Length: 293
Image (cartoon, rainbow, N blue to C red):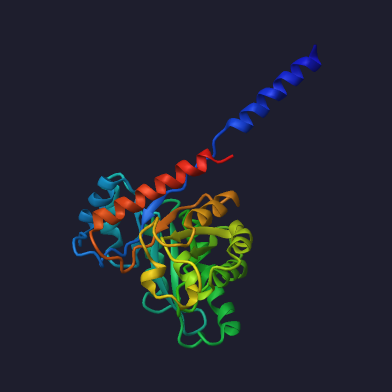
């Protein structure tokens, strides 16, 4: 009797496992790079209302430029600022300049509980000697991470072409060097394609996923991506020959649960049309992923 009950219970669990649908629960936000659109709102409340009307979960903060005004506008519309794009300039040991340590700490204090600051990092002194520069910037990032932990804020380095950290690999390396639970790494799809190419992305995602805090995606063309212009590497989601859905699926299958941002830099045309089309594509990704076995 007990054996029969065990078998029946096992079949029920197996049936649930087979039929249960996978879900995409990642917060989906727009990057704060909408200036290429002629009809994009210029002020904080206009941006918040636009994204609310279309259905986005939030908008990226942009450094120390009126981030509190934007945060309040988003909160008023029931949206979030999941990430903030903040400069970090270091030239000497133990110091940051424009913004200073104190200014960065003020941004951390004002950040929402559980949000992320991703630093675009700059250094004229160390950009060509990262073997010396990495320990210097890692010490700075470690100190900031320890401070941010008290506010439940996460930190990471945003890879950007020609900046001190320009690859996902370097962002991951810095996360390893910093060695704090609230310090992670970032994948920025268009910059990955430009600097590293599209080969080997599956292996990279598997390696970086355990420390990955933020991801930015867009439509793009595949091929010799390191020699493509930006208009082919940054397109509305759903356009271009690069399989962005597969990229997202790889992230999810490797356990990524963090926010995913829509790269909008230098996109043209009608802002409502482009953002609506991209969100529709994202919803299509969610449906497709949930229906896959």
